Length: 385
Image (cartoon, rainbow, N blue to C red):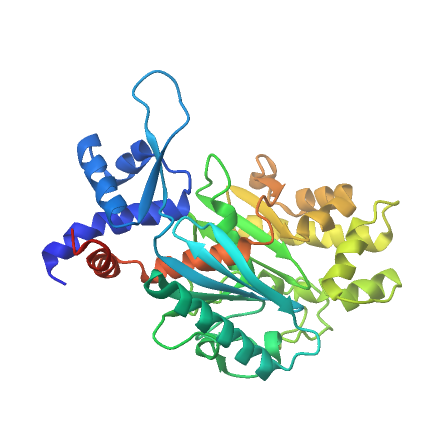
């Protein structure tokens, strides 16, 4: 692609990046973000619309003056195929440029051998990619556990050194990401005013999350950011499957919670934990202790990271609500005085169970949607107009 073509599509790439962070962006907001006057902004949006990248709708009236429009993903635009591979089940969806996901398939993992699961997922994704054709620009896979070097963590399948290419069909770029980090990307878009720094803490069968800056995960050397559950805040005598001792996550796994409460885990561990925390009877010592352990860890993360907002994903809000007083006391006791005077707000996440699919889909677009790809897409749609 020539440098002139690159310049032609660079502002378009920047505009679509803003659309991923702010799905309700107006044309006026888009122009301000790009530093463009109303005329050039209008020309840019029309060019994106001709290329079937965006669509426009009239924005709700915000007072006197000429009404603006809301810029949204085009219904025939590029998509990412996304997979949420969880401990107990899996789901496949189609994600558009603005992070709207349609879940098209799903199933349980009970009794399914890892190799058969991989083969089945690849077949389904290949079939979906063939049906959607050139609209598919990449594959995203969200998984629980530490992700490095584009390989599935052993905790997901019990297999070592499984590259993400085992799921993705050839010829399409594949992005592998931690599910809690992906959920944080989805969560950051739902808050107004949008926090510059957001700390997202997720409790599932362990603890994870991410620190986001301007809607993107803070960078790290190997992509292993957000492994909050492996901070040494737990029992130093307990070895975690990750290889470290004293991990914070270990105390929140179903077996550890059951032992602490004098109970027995039955059925799916996550479902059992959900029911345990949802019990609205008098707070047991176990629930109070877990709420305090969560609050203490969040205080430590606030001291270290200084976020504008803290959101609780997965079961984290249920852990807090099981004994809110214990949680609040632990947070305040653990905060440095400078934070205690004006602590960040801690709220339940607004995103739903589709958050990992949305976040990993947006991460695919962040990886692949540059000026070169947009120029090729436009050539296929409009002949290069």
